[in-house]
Length: 269
Image 1: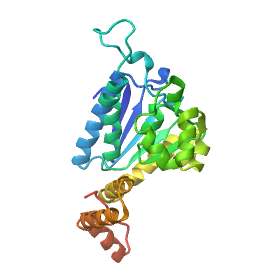
Image 2: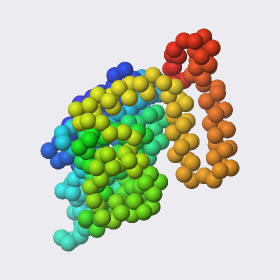
Image 3: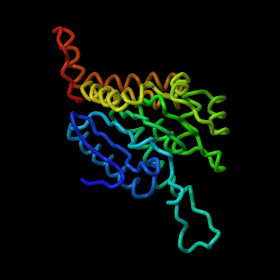
């Protein structure tokens, strides 16, 4: 399938989705939203067919994603000349479904941040499971510069990742956060040299695609649900998910490989 605003490929069990509007720092317009949604539909189909076991998201050019393309938010033609766009409609139609999809996708999602990640672009990256950033990358909660509120899950992710004090500082000041500082604060997983970013992220995605991805999906579910659960609820969830994991082919293969002292051959089932 041909795309105009993204690149999409599937190889070695890894789906790679590349934002491809480099002249606008890969900011989202409606066309890119539609194509990203279609690509994620292809990922889900390939996952169900056993062809996709990890997803890698990155961007072309000098930025990962600058968030919303401000020139692309149209006002209803029936509204007056001074009417403002309905930003809530844009969030409900595009950003919230995207974040929900990435968070719920039952396979590992890796984000390779190759430059500036600002506004929704930063928070879409944080919705992924493992974030690797180029050393030159910057994370910016730019919303406050426009009188807006962090969206795309930003107000949910930031306090949980870096604590309330740092979350408020990032959200209310809109300062640039370097990749190294982001890693030190626990906002992201890893920082690598710029020229090693794509290779490192691809190697990680390929590794995860060979692992017991059904179990990884259950780990992802347990960790995501833990933020809203008390201990007793979480213990019950661990029991239920472990029961599912113990019935998987990958568990049987892992035990057999351990007993036979050989490398396991996981299938994600």
